[in-house]
Image 1 (tube, rainbow, N blue to C red):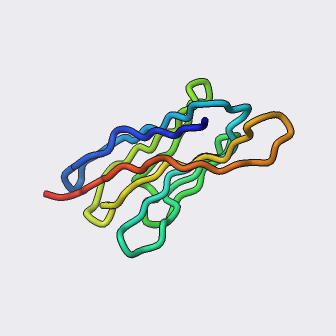
Image 2: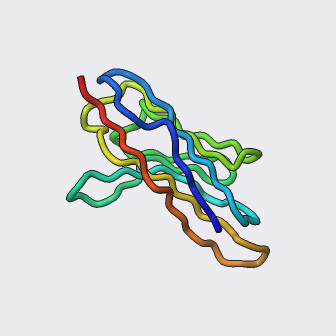
Length: 121
């Protein structure tokens, strides 16, 4: 069974920093794209940052210059470094991964359980 487990969430003051980690475990052949999404109650889940298997990245306009996504393939882990946090960054953050369960399979998509990030003084 594939699992994505996030860690590092919590409460932080405006202007502060936080680093999220997401570890992928289970029966996996290859991890393709990975990303971080966030969702506020009543709103659609949105992409915050994505990273390809080759290391290419993309960010939501609202976080460019403040957030950095990275990955450690040897550890099956994706990170999100969040700096200069703002109250509007408050949301539940979800880790996401596209992966191959076995050679020749199509890509399957998995979500983490989500972690609450609250930016408040």
